Image 1 (tube, rainbow, N blue to C red):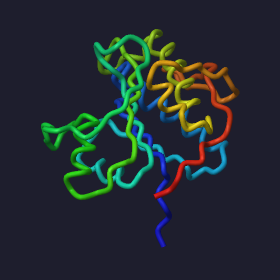
Image 2: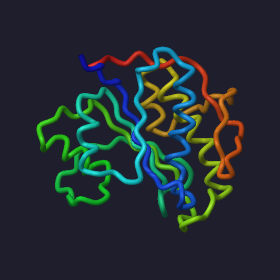
Image 3: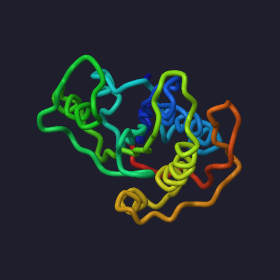
Image 4: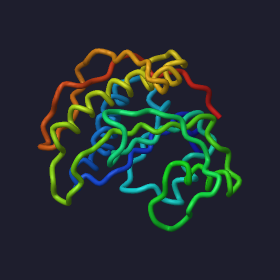
Length: 200
């Protein structure tokens, strides 16, 4: 018998070898470490990939919540969290897609759309091949960790809407370190318990 799907899916996108494009994979690594210390451990699933593809539409099906994490180029300063829905007229291809396009594919092939979907965008500065994470990106990742703390380790369901509306109150640091671009660690962390989301 197959295991039930985690009600919350985090899709972290980025290339660890392209400077600040490593933001998504680094946050995914941090999040997996946090989740390994929480109960229940099957409440959140983390998927990491270089780009969003058509196939990711199947990962979205039937979730209570989906959170896309990606680095932004020339996006809003700092860290942005906003809701996203299916695109009305997506430009479909076999290459990289936007979150709205993946949601539209999920709907188009008859799968059950997630009840809610959000994008967590962390602005990056440099995306050259072989470049390390910039200092400003590492600072923003600290902010992103605090947002993830509220969304995934705070049992208050309204944290999603409140944070998305820009009214978040970041949680303090905790013992789980955030990896930096040199393979070391710095001081962001997670605490609290996993939210009790309904399962599909």
